[in-house]
Length: 231
Image (cartoon, rainbow, N blue to C red):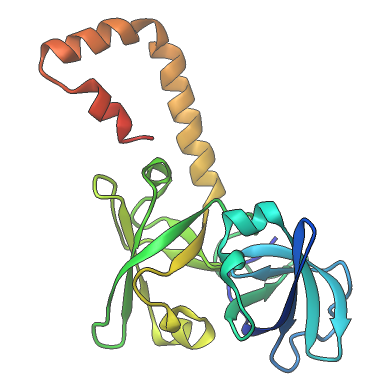
């Protein structure tokens, strides 16, 4: 588990493609690797990776499976790429953000950036089927950072987050430009709540759905368009 508070920015110092996976060597700031052992978990731009080897005092090796490469932005990393990193939370650790699993759900796209005084606002475009889990004032994880959604527009498929200077200093977000892909992990309790409610509604209305669909069509409601909003 991770807390969603990015601890440092690491740099890809080497990568090697092997059958079925890609191996990365990441170089960390001084002190990050203290006590880091083989088998430990590290969040790398929000993806939970396992340490497979140590390289001196400031670097470590990681293997990434093809499935993870396909689902996340790790497939686009090159030597010199900078990423957000956090070590796994220890028992009793303060949860400054919200609990993260390090299991990325999908990639989103940075749609726009605004920079009002002392702030940095990112508007992020989200695939329609995932917007049901995004709510204003709710939590979301972007590249391993726990952030609060400031605004969300489900009809247009986007949400916004506001970043303070300290967040920009500790992460790679200041380097992101429009069109960049981002790793998103939705907040698990929100997902459970939404899915539970949807399942309950489907179960109770299941027998009534044909009649309800016909009634909506008689009233001029485009049922197919209505349903497609949740896909």
